[in-house]
Image (cartoon, rainbow, N blue to C red; front, top):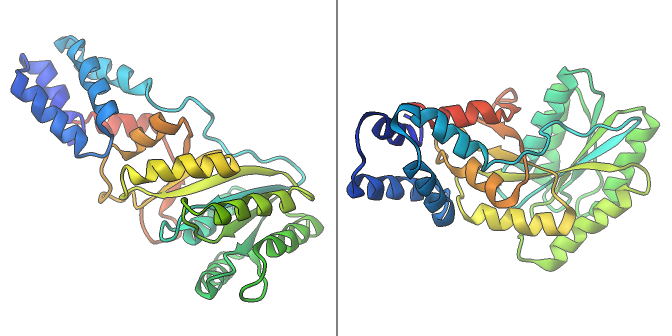
Length: 278
């Protein structure tokens, strides 16, 4: 059953008691949508007539998600996407999955291994690149990340790639020096080509803490879209709704597993519909 399935059923079949509303509020709070959004949804639900429960709730939820475009901004001859986020969210894997997805649509892609502080991250990206047939530009271990990004964008330009996807080191959102370094990487890249997307990778199981991450990263480097990882059933259903409502940043892709194909564009209509399934 979807997150709001029980509420739709109650609205459709019977008068809801105060106890029912309290139970609905507890369930929504447990789903990571947060107290303010929970209260907003409950108040909206109280105004919905029983014979129009699903459509009424769908309309109310639709107003809470971002109205910004979910497509990727590709500008010829070369665009650059930055993949950012804290450690452990799945940035490197997401960069490779995105490259694989776009290559399958006919876009010529290169990858930049900007996480120079973790040799394992560079090796992981190189392994993915070899597997999916995409060039990976890297530097020496502990290289200056901005320098690697510069070399990568030069390679992409000189070899007529349409897109460069740059993986970056995981950084704590509360460390200003690390966040400032992201800004430096972006500025260096833009000497050659525009950074048309800054995609923040969020672990969907981390709940409300991810909203803080989204706020700080957006302030530092202007996040244009989100990639949600671990949306494989272990994540609580309300997270995507909460992050879009809180930040008005569109979710562009979701990762649902470890395989290269476990990655797809986020379908907001299908997501909202799933929340209402009884």
